[in-house]
Image 1: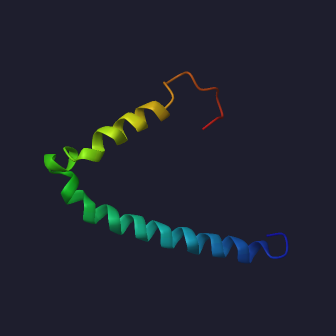
Image 2: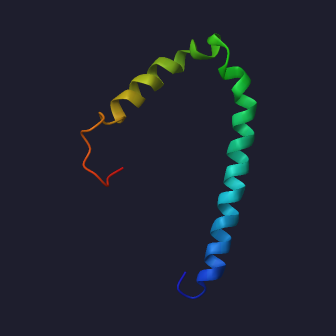
Length: 67
């Protein structure tokens, strides 16, 4: 980074652009599946929901500036 900040930033932006295109493409393919209720009745959904709720801090309990 310190040797060539401009090249670093350009490479970072290019990488982020590729990632965004990849994620956006996958999101559009899965949107149709997620709209159906049978998608949410799969065996992994309950476990994923519990894990998500256990990891997410309660609103207001986190000090400002932390993530």
